[in-house]
Image (cartoon, rainbow, N blue to C red; front, side, top):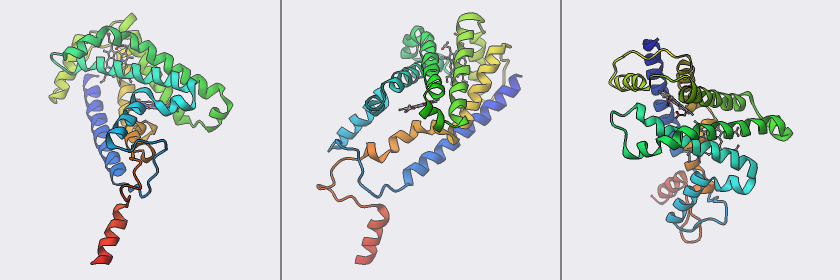
Length: 243
Ligand code: HEM
Ligand code: HEM
């Protein structure tokens, strides 16, 4: 069992690192030939950084468009962030000070994560318009994250696992050696779905995480009069013609 999970996680880690690497490169080199920031837009680079920060931290555009999705979506994502930060302790001999500080809140963030996900799932089922455009993958993502959350809660609050042994396993795993993983059904469920999450990440809607930073309507400076916006290929043509 330990060997199976070690191999599975090496595979999943390779998929997510290489897959995300490729995707991010693809986003990076895709031309954005037109100036299309959604106005009112910032006129300076630091303004754009502030706009993106608001987008990523408080989900500004979602807030403007739909308060219900915003509240559930925001609770889910912020809780997920706390939960993931709390998980760093499985990968560090001596967790950072901040990781220790958030441990107690991180534990309860699990409920925020599950409540947010349930809200988003109910919306996909009861709102006719949203159900109509929902694909199986939309439901599967939510269900996968819900089961990860539930199995985590089971371990954290009901059927405890030997987390020292889990940490030992992952510290050794990072050094490419395999040690004993404690036997626990919720842990097996948790880890299998986490590996699945890592494997589907580069091929699914979860790509919105890196993708948001490449959105031209959000990341462009509104300065078309001050600075001529010219796509790379057009600039190349221009120099060729001059030459
Ligand atoms: C930079 C980080 C991220 C940002 C800014 C972000 C932002 C958002 C926003 C604005 C939505 C739209 C909600 C909607 O209109 O339906 C969304 C949906 C979603 N996000 Fe993220 N997200 C991030 C990272 C992640 C990560 C790491 C995961 C999971 C591992 C995740 C899982 C989801 C899921 C499952 C949905 C779909 C909810 C639904 O509508 O059914 N997000 N995210
Ligand atoms: C290799 C990666 C992971 C390992 C080794 C792992 C392991 C664990 C363990 C051992 C617990 C029980 C903690 C306790 O008893 O106090 C736990 C809890 C939990 N896990 Fe994970 N997990 C991983 C990834 C994830 C991911 C990616 C998510 C979210 C998408 C997640 C969500 C949760 C939640 C919500 C809890 C309950 C709250 C808490 O104790 O933090 N886990 N995890």
